[in-house]
Length: 250
Image (cartoon, rainbow, N blue to C red):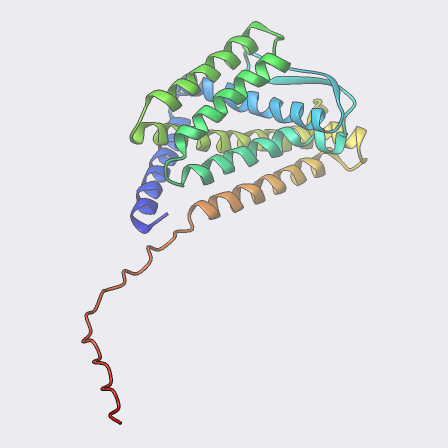
């Protein structure tokens, strides 16, 4: 990505980031951001599902609730990967979307990919509650429509806002996880790691989740802000032709 395009994307990134921060400070703006909270929960539970399936889990399903909480049910699977996959996977995807969206002409592909992902996850694992079904299929088809129908800066702007919201929500969820792990016995993924995997205090597991998530986001955002400089233009210079040597006379 050359300097001009890089600067345009940086302006877009900081604009959507500032918008996200401003909305988070406005009373009742959480109503407008509610769909993005559900989006983050859907991604969180989807990573639990994928980790379980990829490590041999069975009877896997998930749901999202009206309060933006979620639940994944599964039998088996490799718990050291399944349990932290929600928090770490959400941060990973948020950073990956920021990184890929910083490249030219990627937003249409990303919207279509996300749309197919939402439809597939809902069809195979999310036929559980009306909200899960409606949100999964509705958002999935909406993303495909955005990827196919819109051109220009709007899809890139919307995807930038979406990826920043996902990243910020993942950090907010980790902050909540750390709080609950420190002061209460509420059942969380950190508590499950302590009981099912290794008996470290839940707070320690929550801090480990947060550290890994921060590292993934840092790597992705740093990669997005690396700018390729345009190659220097080579000037064509005319040079006088060298006359051939005269033939040697014999």
